[in-house]
Length: 87
Image (tube, rainbow, N blue to C red; front, side, top):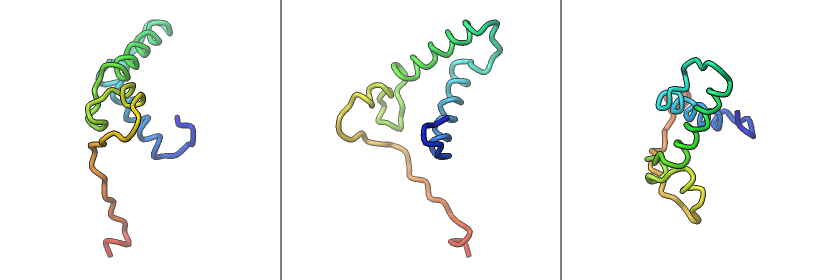
């Protein structure tokens, strides 16, 4: 689902897919391709234009992409324990 095929980028895509399914009902069955496309288009528009994201300082994705300079990222850096570290 990503340009580079990185599993880390795929996780981001899967997160977005989950949000679209949960918040916008895109996990339902649609009567036609046209109605499914219309629902997806509306959901993506809302996600990118109107839904503020805590992880990018309460900006929408479009606002974040239009900014120059750095944006305060609000997620915590996850620390992974490897087997070697545990021993």
